[in-house]
Image 1 (cartoon, rainbow, N blue to C red):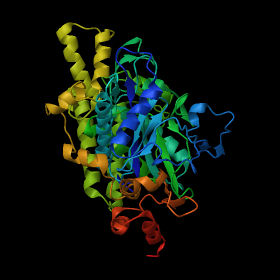
Image 2 (image 1 turned 90 degrees about the vertical axis):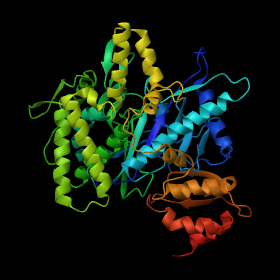
Image 3 (image 1 turned 60 degrees about the vertical axis):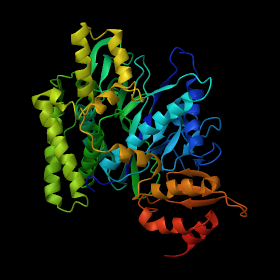
Image 4 (image 1 turned 30 degrees about the vertical axis):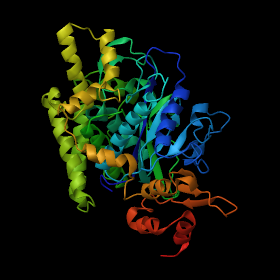
Length: 506
């Protein structure tokens, strides 16, 4: 693999009711999901999630955490029937997770597609807010695509990448930590305030960096690790590993999202291929992660175990040059245009950050946000601890285009967009054609009344006349594509006919 691999993004949206700090976020999150599902013709007792084969306590380091000692937040395989949890026609999962509405995108194979279906999630969140606002007597509910409320709480934007299980996990840890410590310079979302509760005055590169406490671990909501070890592949377990990345920020700018997914895919490819032979390990990675985030001048340095001291940009350049050498050696890229785009933008953004940080504003969230905030600071003489700047930070991430500052800058043409509004609109209801998400999403669209539940690796049907539920496994993520099952789905008048067709040997 190069930049092509099975990948997906998960976004937990911040939620609030203006003027009502005591509003129940779990209830409101359920309303957000349910109102959208109902508008799409998906009832709450249809297309819910299938937890049958989930195992969130299996650790990639070779053991199973006991359920009795696990924190309740880790038990993500337990269904709460009181919370909304649906599968959408675009193959995504839309549900309530830890008192936040979460959109988990369908599986895609390319970074541009990751951008497209991530932006579709933003549009779905916006439509949910608008649908709720149209209900008589409904208090206004706001959603924010960010990662912290500025008062000590953080919520995640997670990434998922499928890898061959044969890749040694210690190699993944060794080579990914330096990359993740420094990757924020190209895909950080920016944040007003230092420390988990934002009490420190200043501006930093990453929304999430201050909330990490350890290098490697199974947890996602406490003692957050740079490398998460959850071993839940949602695919053929002896062939695949799903790398669950929890330290990324919620990015709005297309290039930042493309680089977040594309450069990570390239680094994983180099690890899988054994190309990275030098040890670039960082001393005290958690402290280094936060030191880099706290210095938007990009002058902060990290110390490598070999004694060298380097800036985050220096480390990123090392990975870029290694990727260039690896690609030259391979010469068999299945997606040369997609890889070339990621490489060109990676180099361009690093060059801009190294010469004139502000020139990266059309590409990188934290730089664009910093420019906006500096304008307010200059105009009104605001110090970094002024509460008005914290409010602007929150408003930046508001999903409503009439309120969200990032939308205003996009409308003014100040960002380097990669996908069109038409592509985003289509991705709200249409699944990616080249993964199993096609089968999942199309089944929900065509046979919603008979889809009992679904998950990443199965669809379960309730078929009239059959005594038991019918499970269709889709453990291979590149099976169930439009090319493979599109004709069958179009020709099947009902689920019974679809199941007979799937049972017929090719």
